[in-house]
Length: 259
Image (cartoon, rainbow, N blue to C red; front, side, top):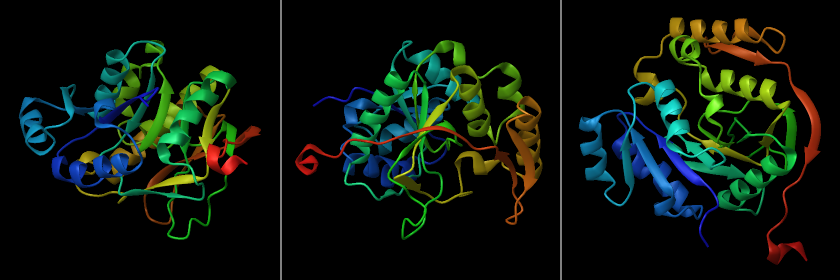
């Protein structure tokens, strides 16, 4: 059965890692190749990615991540369901029998029924899945940028000031943007991404304490009633959300297990 959503992968200088990690992971989770589009920075990158991933559609978009995200919003029609992934997802931790494909299908359905446009998954991966809960939280919860879904609306493009000043914390800004616009976002807490935070390539190519701090401060200045600035024990500046839970929802079990 064809997917009801598109998959957009943002990538930069990780053509081998993308092939070995995110693409393998999505295939194992039942995501067909023909549903995936890989968005790269320039024609030089396009050639490298085509050599490593010849079975996939590759589109030259923009140089920076934020510009690339706006390109993706422009690329797909309004109302499209888009799953956006980064290029270094090793696997998904889970406490649900559902595949990630099934989770995504149901989450897009909940977005439509609950009249919200942004959903995500639990942001912290642990080996024993200790923090995971088999529930969907509707309200204000951080939607991590490594894997998230939207019902596309071109009016929700990142504004120029955000593109310029929110390089390293754009997922924090986006979460708050969609929360303010729609009154809630959705986060399924029964699945989480396994990746190497602050790994080589991608944003890590230019991330510094100063760029992280400036980005975090920009988010807090934009939404001071919903978040605060903090430097965590790992020495990384962070945006701390004021969590808001409006409603708890639950995904349906696979048909063969529902009885």
